[in-house]
Amino acid sequence: MAGRDTTSAVMTWLFYLFSRYSDVEHEVLKELGFVIGDSDEKLSQYEILKELRFLKACICESMRLYPPVAWDSKHAIADDVLPDGVSVRAGDRVTYFPYGMGRMENLWGNDRFDFKPDRWISEMEQGRIKTLKNICPYKFPVFQAGQRVCLGKELAFIQMKYIVVSILKRFKIRPVSSDRPVFVPLLTAHMAGGLKVFVQER
Image 1 (cartoon, one colour):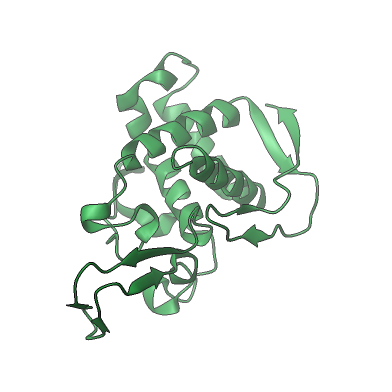
Image 2 (spheres, one colour):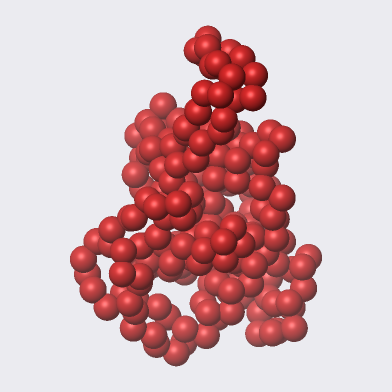
């Protein structure tokens, strides 16, 4: 489930967001042209996929707005005190809410509801992204944090990049319906009814 349902949910929302923000999709295509060009062979190379920094920023921004796990819980094995001074007793359940955290103004600013991959960019060099911001995982806990950080985090990014690039290079994806999709926050969050699309060859 961790490596299948979550990544498919992320990519569903990402393609929906690309359909709403065609300027962002255009920037991703520009990056693909520069890094990969027409070479399908490069697409399967780990180091090449790592170079797709703007696409990674898009994936992160999509997960901020539509996290594949909308809420999660931990159980305390011993008495503890949280950083804000709240006492936690052994056996207590502590739940956190990535979906809500991704929409908090004090964490993400006035434009928190906007899909803005640029918020993840740290440094540019000669018109290209040199580095992305190292966002604190306790602010963006999609992959959890600390000793419980997701072991498959980097694999998930590579998988999603490979699949998204494989589709974007060949096809333009547009939703059938103009209605705003519904976010369903179950154990693994998903889009109600899935994303029905028109597919056009580029």
